[in-house]
Image (cartoon, rainbow, N blue to C red; front, side):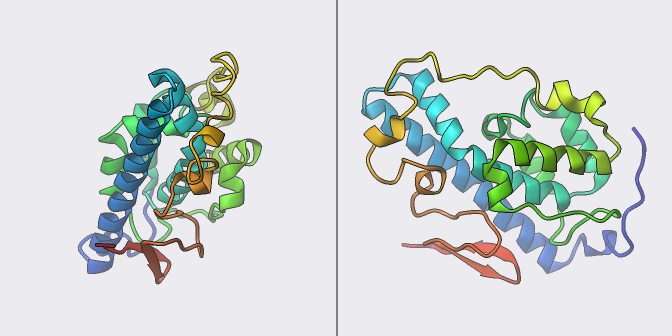
Length: 221
């Protein structure tokens, strides 16, 4: 694996409080996403969905939020760490990023080596919620970022995107529109997270506050 040169001053940030806090809060956000996904699955099954159908619906509902979290994390990780992530991530994670919710400690390990600033030498573009929620725009954004760490589409397409079937279309009516049967709070990506954090720059929801561009969770108890 090729070794990339880190931006000046990056390693000096390793022991700074800002870095420690950033990593701790990102880990909380990841655990929050996992917990809300599990709540979605449990409620779907309570409404009669099978385990497989509930998991599929939850994955689709939270995919945009995971894309957004991952897009920010990748640009705040060293290139060598991104390459290591690429080699260990489950196949098709680029097309179905919800797979990463069950691939720990992969994401916590990457969080533990991330930084509160963009960690790449090359110019990069921060991801937006609009891009993260759109399949085509997310794929384009992701491949552009992977090219910046030396991975071409030809090399990574199968590993990252695979051959994804239109899962969910054959699992019966009522599954594709499962959110409608679960009541408010589960019908869309943003609503599926309920009162949790919407991980998008400049977007706040109950239970979170942004300070200096970093999301901080608030204890609602």
